[in-house]
Length: 127
Ligand SMILES: [Zn+2]
Ligand SMILES: [Zn+2]
Image 1: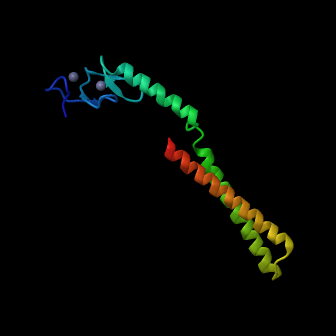
Image 2: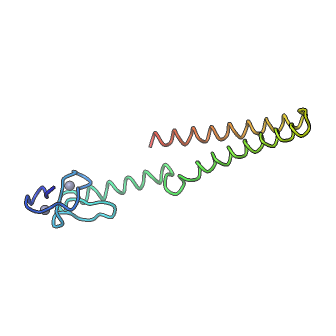
Image 3: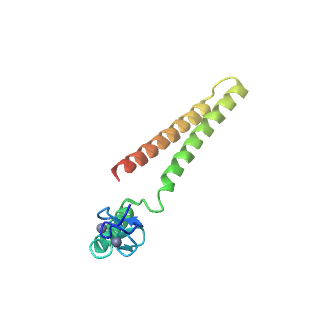
């Protein structure tokens, strides 16, 4: 692929704004991409700023790991409670009142995990 302005020069990258191929003389590095030196630099910088602002608004930056960790924690709590309940039941041979409480709490944690998972998924789609 060659530069769209200099037909003989090999292109080094593609402009983030107009997606044209450009050579080293025509492009400018705007931090996280390349832009046409005269025509697109301003637009790409503005576009980058908008994306950054958007990320901050939706809390994508830095926070993305937290919700998925919550799903894992809630899920593990649920499994742990159910596992403990089953263990106690097998040891004793019958289900006692506190076991229902354990299973109930397990269900609550499982629901919390599902809600968190569903919410993450929803955020992932809208952004
Ligand atoms: Zn351009
Ligand atoms: Zn060029």
